[in-house]
Length: 170
Image 1 (cartoon, rainbow, N blue to C red):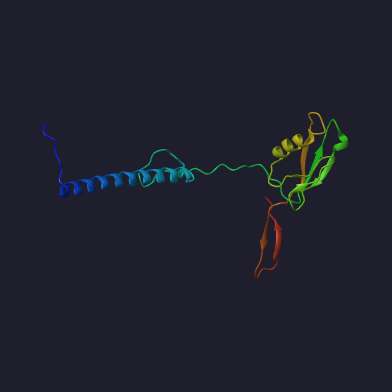
Image 2 (tube, rainbow, N blue to C red; image 1 turned 60 degrees about the horizontal axis):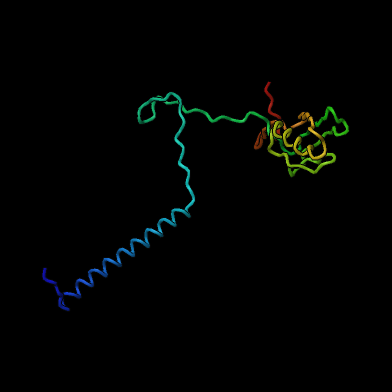
Protein backbone atom coordinates (compact mmCIF):
# COMPACT_ATOMS: atom_id res chain seq x y z
CA UNK A 1 0.00 0.00 0.00
CA UNK A 2 1.46 3.30 -0.95
CA UNK A 3 1.91 5.80 1.82
CA UNK A 4 0.00 9.03 1.38
CA UNK A 5 1.72 12.28 1.91
CA UNK A 6 -0.26 15.46 2.19
CA UNK A 7 1.12 18.57 0.75
CA UNK A 8 1.13 21.64 3.01
CA UNK A 9 -1.76 23.21 1.08
CA UNK A 10 -3.89 20.04 1.62
CA UNK A 11 -2.71 19.49 5.21
CA UNK A 12 -3.95 22.88 6.51
CA UNK A 13 -7.69 22.31 5.79
CA UNK A 14 -7.54 18.81 7.31
CA UNK A 15 -5.78 20.14 10.42
CA UNK A 16 -8.29 22.98 10.67
CA UNK A 17 -11.19 20.52 10.32
CA UNK A 18 -9.76 18.28 13.08
CA UNK A 19 -9.30 21.28 15.39
CA UNK A 20 -12.91 22.36 14.78
CA UNK A 21 -14.14 18.85 15.64
CA UNK A 22 -11.99 18.72 18.77
CA UNK A 23 -13.16 22.17 19.85
CA UNK A 24 -16.76 21.17 19.29
CA UNK A 25 -16.31 18.01 21.41
CA UNK A 26 -14.73 20.04 24.22
CA UNK A 27 -17.62 22.52 24.01
CA UNK A 28 -20.22 19.71 24.22
CA UNK A 29 -18.41 18.14 27.18
CA UNK A 30 -18.30 21.44 29.07
CA UNK A 31 -21.96 22.21 28.33
CA UNK A 32 -22.99 18.73 29.47
CA UNK A 33 -21.09 19.17 32.74
CA UNK A 34 -22.62 22.61 33.32
CA UNK A 35 -26.13 21.29 32.62
CA UNK A 36 -25.63 18.34 34.98
CA UNK A 37 -24.35 20.62 37.73
CA UNK A 38 -27.25 23.04 37.25
CA UNK A 39 -29.74 20.19 37.45
CA UNK A 40 -28.22 18.96 40.73
CA UNK A 41 -28.28 22.46 42.21
CA UNK A 42 -31.84 23.24 41.12
CA UNK A 43 -34.48 22.66 43.81
CA UNK A 44 -36.90 19.87 43.09
CA UNK A 45 -40.27 21.26 42.08
CA UNK A 46 -43.08 19.03 43.26
CA UNK A 47 -45.63 18.11 40.62
CA UNK A 48 -48.87 20.06 40.61
CA UNK A 49 -51.55 17.81 42.08
CA UNK A 50 -54.45 16.88 39.89
CA UNK A 51 -57.89 18.05 40.97
CA UNK A 52 -59.54 15.39 43.09
CA UNK A 53 -63.00 14.62 41.87
CA UNK A 54 -65.69 12.15 42.72
CA UNK A 55 -67.51 10.15 40.11
CA UNK A 56 -64.37 8.90 38.42
CA UNK A 57 -65.63 9.26 34.87
CA UNK A 58 -66.82 12.14 32.84
CA UNK A 59 -65.72 13.62 29.59
CA UNK A 60 -62.66 15.74 28.91
CA UNK A 61 -64.46 18.99 29.74
CA UNK A 62 -65.05 17.81 33.32
CA UNK A 63 -68.81 17.46 33.01
CA UNK A 64 -70.36 14.94 35.36
CA UNK A 65 -67.61 15.26 37.97
CA UNK A 66 -68.21 16.62 41.45
CA UNK A 67 -65.27 18.18 43.32
CA UNK A 68 -64.44 16.53 46.61
CA UNK A 69 -64.08 18.91 49.52
CA UNK A 70 -60.82 18.98 51.39
CA UNK A 71 -60.75 17.21 54.77
CA UNK A 72 -60.78 19.70 57.63
CA UNK A 73 -59.35 19.22 61.08
CA UNK A 74 -62.46 19.52 63.19
CA UNK A 75 -60.51 19.74 66.45
CA UNK A 76 -60.44 23.12 68.16
CA UNK A 77 -57.06 24.85 68.00
CA UNK A 78 -55.97 26.79 71.05
CA UNK A 79 -55.67 30.58 70.90
CA UNK A 80 -54.52 33.34 73.20
CA UNK A 81 -56.96 34.09 76.06
CA UNK A 82 -58.20 30.47 76.18
CA UNK A 83 -58.40 29.14 79.73
CA UNK A 84 -57.29 25.57 80.43
CA UNK A 85 -57.70 23.43 83.53
CA UNK A 86 -54.77 21.04 84.00
CA UNK A 87 -55.35 18.21 86.46
CA UNK A 88 -52.89 15.58 87.62
CA UNK A 89 -54.89 12.73 89.25
CA UNK A 90 -51.85 11.18 90.99
CA UNK A 91 -50.03 14.42 91.82
CA UNK A 92 -52.72 17.00 92.64
CA UNK A 93 -50.13 19.54 93.79
CA UNK A 94 -49.51 20.25 90.08
CA UNK A 95 -53.20 20.98 89.33
CA UNK A 96 -53.62 24.46 87.89
CA UNK A 97 -55.72 26.69 85.70
CA UNK A 98 -53.74 28.49 83.00
CA UNK A 99 -54.59 31.20 80.51
CA UNK A 100 -52.83 31.26 77.16
CA UNK A 101 -50.88 34.50 77.00
CA UNK A 102 -50.98 36.83 73.96
CA UNK A 103 -47.64 35.38 72.77
CA UNK A 104 -49.13 31.85 72.73
CA UNK A 105 -47.29 30.51 75.80
CA UNK A 106 -48.58 29.14 79.09
CA UNK A 107 -46.69 29.33 82.35
CA UNK A 108 -46.58 26.01 84.15
CA UNK A 109 -45.88 25.11 87.74
CA UNK A 110 -42.36 23.67 88.33
CA UNK A 111 -41.39 23.47 84.62
CA UNK A 112 -40.63 25.91 81.81
CA UNK A 113 -43.26 27.78 79.83
CA UNK A 114 -44.39 26.13 76.61
CA UNK A 115 -45.91 27.46 73.38
CA UNK A 116 -49.40 26.05 72.86
CA UNK A 117 -51.01 28.49 70.41
CA UNK A 118 -52.43 26.58 67.42
CA UNK A 119 -52.27 23.15 69.08
CA UNK A 120 -55.25 20.88 69.68
CA UNK A 121 -56.04 19.44 73.12
CA UNK A 122 -54.55 15.98 72.29
CA UNK A 123 -51.37 17.66 70.99
CA UNK A 124 -51.21 19.73 74.18
CA UNK A 125 -51.61 16.63 76.37
CA UNK A 126 -48.68 14.96 74.57
CA UNK A 127 -46.57 18.11 74.94
CA UNK A 128 -47.42 18.40 78.64
CA UNK A 129 -46.56 14.74 79.25
CA UNK A 130 -43.15 15.16 77.63
CA UNK A 131 -42.54 18.41 79.55
CA UNK A 132 -43.58 17.01 82.95
CA UNK A 133 -41.75 13.70 82.30
CA UNK A 134 -38.59 15.61 83.26
CA UNK A 135 -39.78 15.80 86.88
CA UNK A 136 -42.55 13.17 87.12
CA UNK A 137 -42.44 9.48 86.26
CA UNK A 138 -45.02 8.68 83.55
CA UNK A 139 -47.31 11.65 84.32
CA UNK A 140 -51.06 11.34 83.86
CA UNK A 141 -52.52 14.69 82.81
CA UNK A 142 -56.08 15.72 82.01
CA UNK A 143 -56.72 18.96 80.13
CA UNK A 144 -60.09 20.67 80.05
CA UNK A 145 -60.86 23.72 77.94
CA UNK A 146 -62.71 25.99 80.38
CA UNK A 147 -63.11 29.15 78.34
CA UNK A 148 -62.38 30.01 74.72
CA UNK A 149 -63.04 32.74 72.21
CA UNK A 150 -66.51 32.16 70.89
CA UNK A 151 -67.24 32.75 67.21
CA UNK A 152 -68.43 36.28 66.53
CA UNK A 153 -69.27 38.72 63.78
CA UNK A 154 -68.92 42.48 63.53
CA UNK A 155 -71.65 44.80 62.29
CA UNK A 156 -70.65 48.22 61.04
CA UNK A 157 -71.90 51.03 58.89
CA UNK A 158 -75.25 52.76 59.11
CA UNK A 159 -77.06 50.28 61.34
CA UNK A 160 -79.03 50.65 64.54
CA UNK A 161 -76.57 48.74 66.76
CA UNK A 162 -73.04 48.44 65.33
CA UNK A 163 -70.56 46.29 67.20
CA UNK A 164 -69.27 42.79 67.90
CA UNK A 165 -71.87 40.05 68.39
CA UNK A 166 -71.55 36.41 69.42
CA UNK A 167 -72.47 33.90 66.74
CA UNK A 168 -75.01 31.55 68.30
CA UNK A 169 -76.65 28.47 66.87
CA UNK A 170 -80.21 29.32 68.03
